[in-house]
Length: 186
Image (cartoon, rainbow, N blue to C red; front, side, top):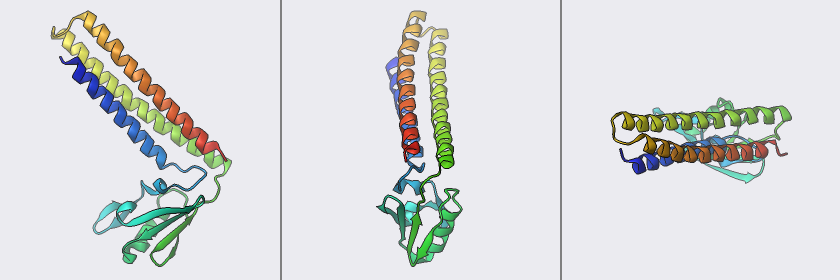
């Protein structure tokens, strides 16, 4: 068993998990407009579901407004409908190929709801990391039963990997706490 390759694999997978968490958090609405708010919205166009970024340019002219400039004006209606049906609570207004989204200030109740969603995303990231940890530990245990490594090496490798997972878990907690503070700030 090549422990260094296993450790590199674990570090890459946990880093990817944190990247996914950051992308999910980017789509969560805080008190100000963000172009990433519409990243998860899929639009049925040209025979498939496409992300808005492949059909239009999203920009933020100010803190409370998003503008979506649709490149093909024939798709403006389906983009508007996709935004309305996205569950983000946005009410698009279309003028030609430009869709304006005014983001009202978040209510206290909505902020608490978004905080719960952020917590769910963070917990999903931790579950993913636990699965990665379990797979890595199983590989180490298999190497011991196959007599590839000694039990002393097993303990050393498991302790070393646990430090990686503890560090990544703390990183997830810090990111989640930062996002929660961002959501709750008025």
